[in-house]
Amino acid sequence: MSYCELFQDGVGGNSPVNHSRFATTGLERRRILERYRRIAMVGLSSNPFRPSHFAAIYLTAESYDVTPVNPREGEVLGRRSYPTLMELPDPIEVVDIFREPAAVPEIVEQAITREAKVVWMQLGVIHEKAAQRARDAGLEVVMDRCMKIEHARFFGGLNTVGLNTGVISALRRPRGMSR
Image (cartoon, rainbow, N blue to C red; front, side, top):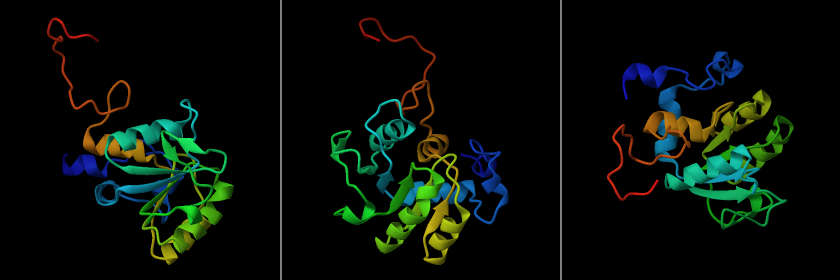
């Protein structure tokens, strides 16, 4: 990936966050995605048509350890779901928030208490006061960005279904291989 590509805004390029004190660079987001592997996904749904569900499938396929946090779910994608961050048994690195902005301050407080490293707010989730609280507590903050989209953008996982097949080719499949 070239130096210029790392600094392009890509998806979310028109976000008001890009012109605020909470803007993050492509290099910062890429470093977070490379460094941290344990994700507590708050608001992860078992509904396969929800963005959180699709993002979790993608991130799991990319070897991230995704733990569902949703009080309305008992299990998502074969993994036990926890009602809150406080009930997770394992350490947390990234708190990925798929909730409305009004829910963010409480989630940030739990992330601080649990000593998370990053609070990542999904597309459309912006809460500057909670973001400042997280930063003041030493956490990194990403707002109005999707972990799945950012990962795919930096590491080559963009294709027709959004999952990284590892193969991009214009060649026809050999005879005998099914579609």
